[in-house]
Amino acid sequence: MKIIRSCAEMREYSLAAKGGGSSIGLVPTMGALHEGHISLLKTAERYCDIAVMSIFVNPAQFGPREDFEKYPRQLERDCELAKTAGCGCVFVPPVEEIYPKNYNTYVTVENITDTLCGASRPGHFRGVATVVLKLFNTVMTDTAVFGAKDAQQVIVIKRMVEDLNLPVRIIVSPTLRESDGLAMSSRNAYLSPRERAEAPLIYKSLAEAKKMYDDGLRDSRQIKNSVLSILNNASLIKPEYVEIVDTVRVKPLDEIDTTALLAIACRTAETGTRLIDNVVLGGNL
Picture 1 (cartoon, one colour):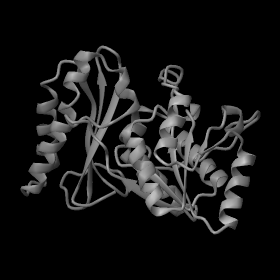
Picture 2 (picture 1 turned 180 degrees about the horizontal axis):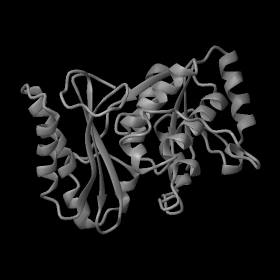
Picture 3 (picture 1 turned 135 degrees about the vertical axis):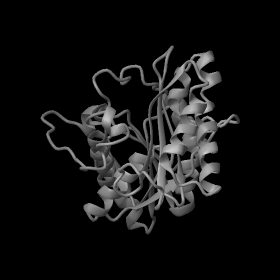
Picture 4 (picture 1 turned 90 degrees about the vertical axis):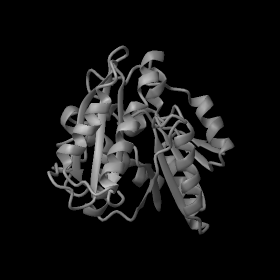
């Protein structure tokens, strides 16, 4: 497995691979890898000849009071996991490679970033879209794989790809879960034991909502009330939002008459950890 740290070397590697007829699949990550990331890598390997995993903790998507400084950084461990999983190349650029001195250009995807996580994290998706576009251009990827857990991110990236006519195929990989249903996330490591014990209620509430939808209920208010009633059984998991939106405009739905995203964000009381999860009703992302 090759480890690359500069954008110039990454482009050189990709040009050589493409010149030899190989297709490239990119898995963008911020490191602190877990089995969910490895599943994305396996998906990329199915679609492409060479899987490239990027590891970059992107400062542009963190707000001033968010966890950029304490976000887990485990590069040696991450590279070993990627190698074991069959990754062909890991791209690990330092911040100054992605945002050099006097950097001034950012990507803004409008409207669909105003709700859900975008409402409480201003500038977050500008940072996401900017770094993803830079990674696409640098890695020269044919395919990119993202996890369904970050559903609004998936919608934003798909919109950017379509609007900017980018020659990149986006693959959405299912959310991987712990045995008790909690969505795998690097931030789960922050949870206190008591928070971790309550966190599976998030998925329990989503599963109940999905059952209600499958049984024929289409009233968003009733479904959201069910979710909130389950989450209210937790003393340390506090909902930031519970919303049902369409998957194109990301606007709230009163009646579910199209493919819908039921999305949840919660904040924990002891460690202040932010957890997100979702289920898609009546279709796919």
